[in-house]
Image (cartoon, rainbow, N blue to C red; front, side, top):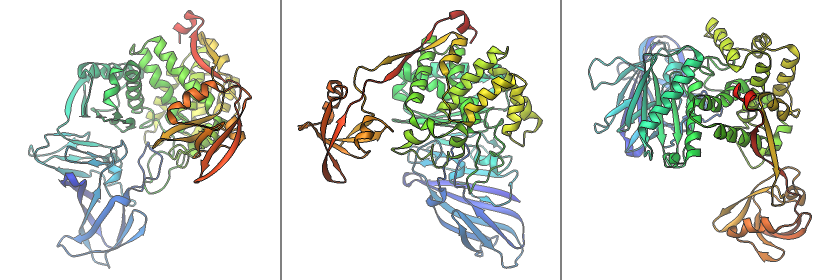
Length: 565
């Protein structure tokens, strides 16, 4: 079966993309078409079909073909025993959400994310699927990783290997700025949408350094060309990996701040390394994909945990951040891990499997009930790097072994058992068992013990203010409790997320005064709180706990050992 998509944007200010999908083949019975419910790399059922409307189906002569919806985002076409060689589907999708996993169209540009607007056919790979773009004449640029096959300059026709490849190819259209560089004889294109308050030359040079360092580290470039689509928008943050491209979002106004710029570089390294780890090396369950239902795996600790260790490590080793900046990133990660009570209840395997309902659906109690496979996964792979160092190798040897394993069977991902067998060739069984328990269980990990092997130590310091165990936010002039930590003084006193703090010891509390109140509260001092809960006022007695320990820094205690890190 062949597929040709005509993608038309003629109502940009109203956020519509109109799609004409022509299918050619021998259609003698019926088939089911669908719009994906989720995007690979982002494990949440986003139900893209909620934005689809005006679907109709016709034969080659314009005759109507009957169809009915058979499930969410799925429609069954009934040919009534007629033999069709061509089927035409027409529909439009509303695109007004600018994230890396959704499509966005307005008068300035169009960002098209494949799963959100490109229908597929159940049971068909749609090999050689083609796509043509039509858009406003004033838009001067298209950034698209698909192979262009246009015969004329303004046709904008592209070809994909199959439906998976088509969905995995984001498109930016508009008047965005473009740049690029060559590495290993291959073009790396940059597309910047939004306002970039930064030196674009330095930005390009530093991305080039990341590509060069990781490319040399891996020893092989697995693509012909690569595309960085960057959205610099206020409040933006995130990234999504693709087969030979990535989409990144960041607040461009913040790049002048050194700490934020390092964070941006770490995001670039994270998504770029996914070119190897996730888009190629991957858990067995992640490809080929079933786009209409969840694709469960217990191995996102490999997909994202390994990448979360490597991204910061790459930026440091490439000389794009200082030793102090790298150790600051590590200390921040350890602090976040220490504060997350949910690590007692979810292992990395459980966190991975439940990503669909936990990590991608955070709520007020998330910190008390689960742990991020990004956060803990990154720290656990830090430990693995140290264990590998102890045994005469390092994380690079593991990654290269995984890469060679992928090349033996590129169409299938890796299982946990196969990963374990590879790792057992690099470390002794007792070290392996200690490490794999960090994946499988919720047991405490003595990170200090491992860090000393590479000349580092964790330095803790007690906070000056007493511990309450709650987070607050100002909301329309009111002081609202946003989160309450499990077993904290606030938890034991009966305070809830969603409570409004009105007064403490009969004194009115304003949002602007909260930090001062925290500072003057005394350990074990009982205070009377007046709160509003569901618009009902009540009193609670709250006693602050002793100041808690926080990680102040990760310190180098043996420069010789750390140099080999």
